[in-house]
Image (cartoon, rainbow, N blue to C red; front, side, top):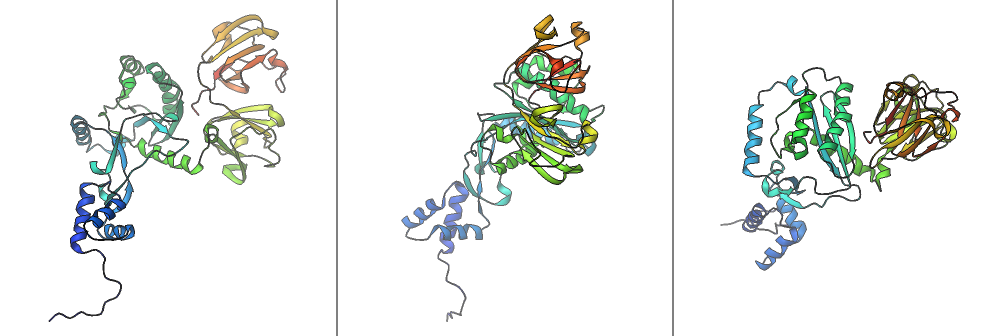
Length: 425
C-alpha cells in the first residue's frame, strides 16, 4: 500500500525524464537558450517557465556563463603547446623569474566585445564547445604593446597604424631595453614574444642577435601559456570600470597633497592652468596613463617636469620643485613622424639642422655652440639643459620658437640635448 506523507513546498514541475532531456540538450549544444528549451518542452507537451529551466540547470551544477574566446587551433598547435608544457614542467621558479614577457593587445573603448552565453560547469570553461574561436587582432580601437616580469611591469606603448617589422624593432629598442634596465633584470634574462610574422622576421631575428638577447622558444597560438594575458585582463577590467568615452579619457594623472599618495587628491585628464582651487600643495602624484607636464606657476609657466606613467611618491625630492605645483598640461598622443629644425641663433639664424630622432648631445653631434631657436613641425619634444637628457626641461609643441632664451623662466638657459615624447607612457 502506498502512503503519501506530508511534504513541504510545491511539487517539482519537471519530471526526472524531462530533466534528463534538458541536460542532454545543453550538453550537446551548450549555446542553447532558455527560450529554446521552453519551446522544445512545449512541443513535447510540458509547459514551464524560463525560471524553472534555470532552477533545473542549477540543480545539476550548470550556470550561464560568457563563452571564452580562444585562438582557432589546428591539431599541430595543440601538440606544440603540449610539448612546450612537458619540456618545461620541471623548470624551477627562479628560471621563470628571469623571463621578460611581452605581447600586444586590443582594447575596445566604445563598447564591449560581443559575447555569447553557454551553460557549463565551472571546470569546463575551456571545453571547445564552451568557447568562441577568434583570430588575433581582428580590428579594434586601440592596440598596445607591453612587457612585464616577476620584478614588475615594464613600459606600455600605444601602436599607431599598422605595425610592421621596422616599427616592432623600434618598439623593442625604445621600450623593452629601458624596461629591462629599470627592473634590474641582470644578466641571463630571457625575452619572450610569440610567433607573429613581425616577431620572427629575418631582420628582427638579426636585431635580437646583435643585441645578444636570449629568446624563449614559443609554440604558436598559445596565449594561455603567457601570464601577461592575466595582466591584460586586469587592465581591460579597470578601463571598463572607468567607462571611457574617448581616447582622452584614458589619460589620467592624480595629484596628492602629502607624500606617499596621502591627503586630499585631485585627478584630471585635461589641461589645468590653475590648480590652486583644487589643492593647496602637492607632494606626490601618480600618472595612471598618458604623459603630462607639471609647472610650478600658473598658466604653464616656470619650471617644468615631464611625467610618464608611474608613481612619484616624493615630488620635491624627485623633481626639485617646491610643493606649489600650479598647473599641468596633458601631452597628446602623437601619430606619425617626428620632425623639428634647430637653429644656432635666434630668429632661425645661423647653422640649421633637421631632426627626426633623439639627440643626446647637440654640441657633439652637430658641432653647434648653441641652440637659440627652433621650428617644431611634427610631434612633441623635450629639450634639456644638459647632455644625455639631464637638467631642466622644456616641453616643445608644434610651432615656431624664435628666441628660446627669452621664454618665461629660461632666461639665458642653454639647451644641450633633445628627445621625442613618444607614446611609451
